[in-house]
Length: 107
Image (tube, rainbow, N blue to C red; front, side, top):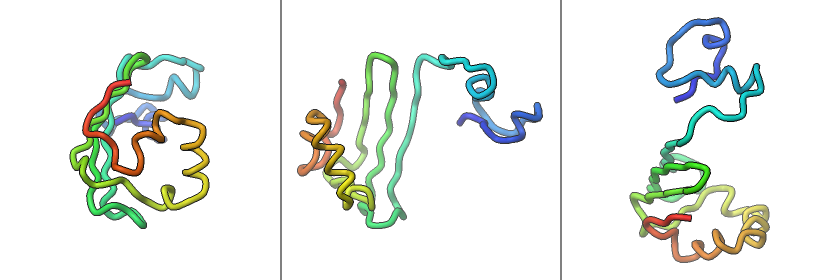
């Protein structure tokens, strides 16, 4: 977790992780070499029942592990015209839709 709240700006602590403050105040463009993330859709409007994923990213690689890869991702965005316009512009990611995202892939 990155603390971007007022506690950090005031020099107080309270969150785990590194501060994001320098990116906002000193125009630092590089903070870390890798980013890790998790995503869970349970409870989001018009969503899949469960579509959890974990990912790691560097400037060279993007790794996504879909924990429930048999379930196709959906939410309010995937039901909108904007989503289909994005897919028209990105043929690689568009190839992963319709049958659910593949379990693991590197790009």
